[in-house]
Length: 214
Image (cartoon, rainbow, N blue to C red):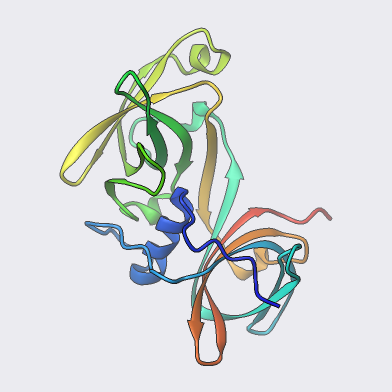
């Protein structure tokens, strides 16, 4: 039975995962999502040796090979107060009728991932962009913005330019950290960008969204 595959996933995740697979965790001048790489969403069933099994719910279990080169990323909830000048972040945004970019998601990267997918470029849906870069400045009060009583904007710099992103109070913020296979315990929620091979699917990049409860 085929795995759950989102061939044209439009969030920042597919683009970033493609960068990690193609270039590992190093700075890049231009992102390069890997065409044809299937994205699998589900929960970990088991990890035995190099064999990873993921339950995709709708389409049953998928078996992948976990290579030594696979990038494992730990994604945890964060808040607007964690978004500070000097942080390297990734954000998806939509250009509204006012002509400004409004953030939908903000993802804070660890220093080891500084430069991953750096740049500003369009994504699949109309008026949607992905911006990965350094927070040059934060305009407005985080506390007031989080409560809806004020406005917040980020000036993000990257190779070749800068972008101003307006930040609504309901934006999703997450913290990204480099992880290990110890995170791949049964029940963990994951997104896997797989690489087809003659011997089946290989796990190229794995984002762990939530840890299994003990």
